[in-house]
Length: 231
Length: 231
DNA sequence: ACCTGAACACCGTTCAAGT
DNA sequence: ACCTGAACACCGTTCAAGT
Image (tube, rainbow over all chains, first blue to last red; front, side, top):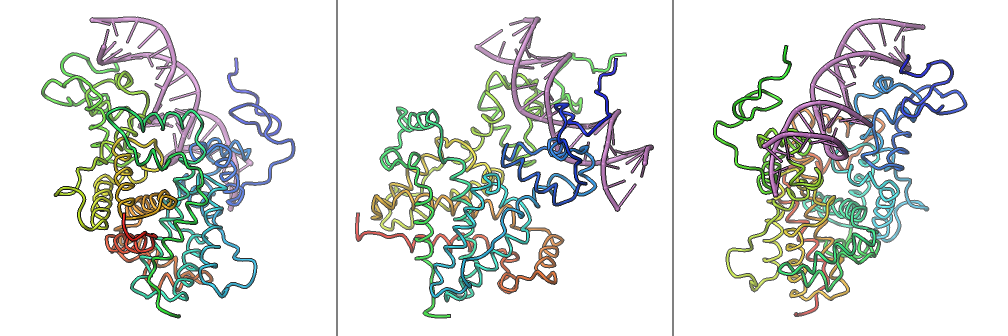
């Protein structure tokens, strides 16, 4: 008559009933929770993160998570920042060319986000964590050293932030679409009475050189920054 | 004994039991649904849109919506595009200064999104609708007329797209924070062992001139575009 | 053609309790 | 200090039915 499976033996998934791990689970910790959240989102996307699934993944009850974490929002904050750490360029930092340093850090930033496609959409929606702040701090130093004046600094930083985040979020959304959705998009562009000849001609939505567009656009932006001769 | 209220008389909200409207509701239609969705999100944010609430708002049962609409995703697609229409500049379009035209359209784009703060976060996550496509088409024409070469066109368009979307989404997130969260942010910056002197000095996170940063950053980007002498 | 309620398989989180 | 299950107030959507 019992509708719930027996609770003897090792912890089992509420969802599948299969044993989650043959060995003993280590105790819960913030680190384990955050790491599991990253893995879960890597595998199943932003919407795939569920407190219940997260607990399952860790072999614990759902509510156990809440002793370590305030809410799901807190998990998202920590997961995002955990993925954004910067280890710096190969050699000692201040290279002769400021542009090289800036581009290296931003390419790495973008690469981090592309490794975890859920992160780009999360970036602008949460409080800034230590890793993101460290990157902004570094960017600020680099631009000052390049000779940007104080009055232009914040606008320059936000513009670069917008470029990195926008390029990444746009790419994870529009990049590598299925052949079907490509055909759909193309048909949409050619719908009678609603035509977009310029977009059609330039293949804006079919062009797949997202890396090139990122680099080139970043070049435009850096070219446009007003720099004084030297720091 | 009945646990549900009587179903005589005009349609009542399942949630509150109050009559939703003293007059007869007009029949459902795609237009009414989309408009109600926009109103709901304007009032309660992206997370405030619920199929049940939407139905309540319209005085219908939840499942009635699904005759007009495929899914909640479909409602979001339509709501976004409905809010992004461009009516063009006051006078006939091709002004002597291409920059003026571009800036006008982009300022208007940003203004549309700021009027509906949920829209910026939605923009990069959905299929492009007619209003957004029309704006991209217009932008493409304007840049070609300005003399950008074909090979640079798509990178330029995406960079500008990133700027508009990024600036708006960043502003709706970080803009006008409460005094409390400002203090929190400041304390975070000054935490011992984890300091961000450059960000602190430039007041990157406290500066509230988002309009200025948008315009200035767009200026940098347009300055950096490589233009041939004339179209 | 248009609308409906019941039901299903989920959510995040509160609570009162266990060790 | 750390973990738990039951329960609450929600979700989006399928289905079989009504008019």
